[in-house]
Image 1 (cartoon, rainbow, N blue to C red):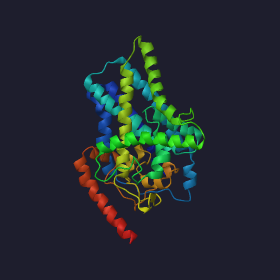
Image 2: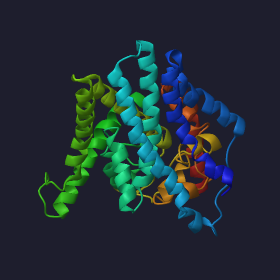
Image 3: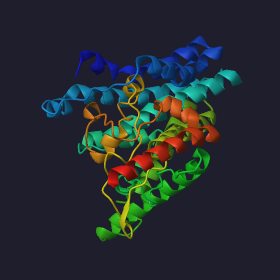
Length: 362
């Protein structure tokens, strides 16, 4: 992999830098992160174009184990916690106008949710105890720790079927999907943990049930942050829990917007009652724009990820036969927020893909 690509994966750190810079410049500058992500990146994506380069098979094992790529993610983990503490300190000072506060609150979750959950997703798939710990820690900052259970043991098993809360259905708009997936993913994680407890011969609400701790941990973190800054200020700073939970909701909403985009209308063939064809590279939408893939650690090469879930981000392949989105995730998120536009564009692409697949199966 070229040195330019290796450096490119540090692009994600631009986003927290913009949030911090926007705050200190003040006023309308607090919106600079939102403008960069949803205006500048799509424009640069369109100008730079797609990335058709894949890591060659003969060097893939070497690049997959190169520590540099894990190092980038590890730095992000520590940066995000420092960033969250900095954010709490800003909120504790209560010196922003309403306009500045809105811009700040729109930009902040692009760090903790937009990139942070992407990093947690990557680390959560790995066997390393350290990487899994980092994944859970990041998810704690956005009140979405159950994602670690549901995504790995639920979504990757049931993707492209009616059993998967994270598979958006044809004709389902994002807002309806958001309610369904947030509710059902959380309940699914509890069911998966109950099943695990039953297999181990333990009570459902045993202390070994991770969902108990995953539910409590974000609240404990929020309480700790509130206590620290309240003690420092000499009064209870109720703005901190408000800030913590708002940025969490907006953060995991970005994740669910990505889920909506990645799996809209894509279904696996039912080969027997409640039995479906094996997940392959045809069962997720992809976007291969070079720049937005840098910011998202190649999450947009999603079909290869689902076919080979433990593959590290730097060696994920672009597969031309996979269904392709018309643009990168930042553009597609904006489109998903306008259902008539989304359906007009994506239903046509979905129908074309379904026809092509039917012809291929004949």
